[in-house]
Amino acid sequence: MDIIWHGHSCFTLKGEDAMIVTDPYTGLGTTLPKLKAHVVTLGDSHAAAMKAEVAEVEGNPKLLDWPGEFEVAGVNIEALPHEQGNIFIFNIDGIKVCHLAGISSEPSDETLEHIGDVDVLLIPVGGETVMDAKTAQRLIEAIEPRVVIPMYFMSGESKMNIQGPSEFLKVVGKSNLEPLDKFTVKGRAGLPEENMEFVLLEPQLKG
Image (tube, rainbow, N blue to C red):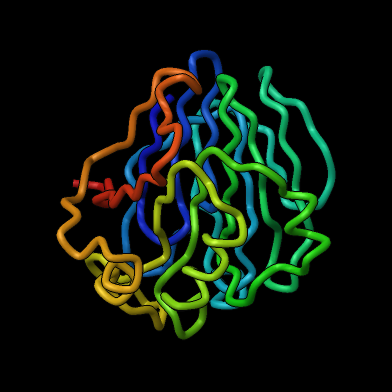
């Protein structure tokens, strides 16, 4: 599976047989490349509040923007309601990915229990309108994922009131982390067994 970040809370999750795009918005100050997917999920109420429009995604994807359980293109998807939108959980290629969209507060204990064990956590860290570094750290400690990928921080241009990743990286002791173009993992066996891995991604935008 490849995980590619496009800024804000927009990702492409590319599995063996399915592609998912999360929160593909326009009007937030960054320009997305052409995206293609079987599924598009919308979980970010902050972008919607700014009257951001949903970007077009090729492939005639199924759009999911409400809580529930779904199966699309062989991927099990669950959307959990939160006061700032929806938290999405994907089981793709045997890997459980939790996408926290644009939440700014910690989920309830009941929601955390429902989320359960997570392989890859996509978590906002930019503060102000979304979760800040220290809140993100507490949530990471509560969920204990195998891989953490921060998102929703200032990188390039953004109309959102968010900060860069430096404070978060400092809080988690990863200030020297070098950004990657994408995160690739070949099955669950390729994930770390004991030490939590932090991955910093460079947003892939329209050139």
